[in-house]
Structures are given as C-alpha cells and as structure tokens.
Image (cartoon, rainbow, N blue to C red; front, side, top):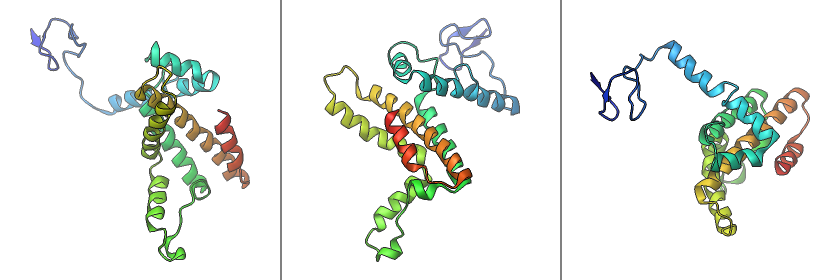
Length: 196
C-alpha cells in the first residue's frame, strides 16, 4: 500500500481516492511537454475552442464560465497571456508595434517625459502583464460604477481577461494585414474592438 504524496491518504489503485493525484508520477520528458502544449492548444476545451466560442457568443460564454461551467474554456489568465504573446510576436514580426503603442523618446523632448517614456517602453515589451494590471484597475472602477449588479471584483476581472485577450487577437489580425499591405488599419482595429 502506498500513501498519497499530496494528501497522505492510503492508495490502493492508480489514483488517490480523495484528491485524484496519481499514485506514481511519470517523469517529465519530451512527451510530457508535448502533451501539456497540446492540452492548452487543442480544439476541444483549448485556446482555439475558446476563441471560437468568444467570437460566436462572447457574453453567454463568459456568463456560463462565471456561473455554470469552468471546464469548457481556457483559464482566463492563461488566455490573456497567450493572446498577448501572439500579438507581440505578430507585431514584432510585421514591425507594427511602434504604431500601436508609440513610445516617447526622452532625448528629443529635453527629458521632460522620461518616466512616461519608460512606462510606454515597458508596456510595449510586456503586453500580457500590462493587460492584467490594466484589468485590475478597470475591474475596480467597473465594480464601483456598476455595484448594483451582482458581480464581484474577481468575476469582472475574469470577464476583462477574456475581452482583453480577444482584443489582442483582433489587433494581431489587423497587424498581419497591415504588415502585408502597408496600410494603416489602427483606426479600424480600434473600432472593431469597441464594437466587440
């Protein structure tokens, strides 16, 4: 008989009857890493499925995630980090990041905006974290202004993670088109984001 390494319960099968931990963990190898990546990206309950659901019925899917079923969609923090990473890669590859968040060069404005320039540079280099931090502030103010609704701060934050993730995908889509056609589409991308 083996004791569970997670909760200490006696295990008589392949899994712990209390916490579900496997009796013997497999070693981390290339197959394990591949499986983890597939788990995040696979279509059923993965990132592609989440994107499809958030395009077809965003309000209903987020409402279902908050109140009914959290296993259908990718976890919101993972979603916003992955989508922000995708946007960063696309914007960097097509060289459109300077147009979407233009940082101020402190040397040309006689060091008046050094802090602002540093903040914009950090935002430009860390979209995923910046989106989460902005989401915290937006969730706070949304909760304050819409306190008559029965959503708490964290439920609003979850909603914002999904919305901001989809926003990053839309900006990424327009960045690809802009990079290929060399036309400025920022206005259209922003309008589509507001409509969404």
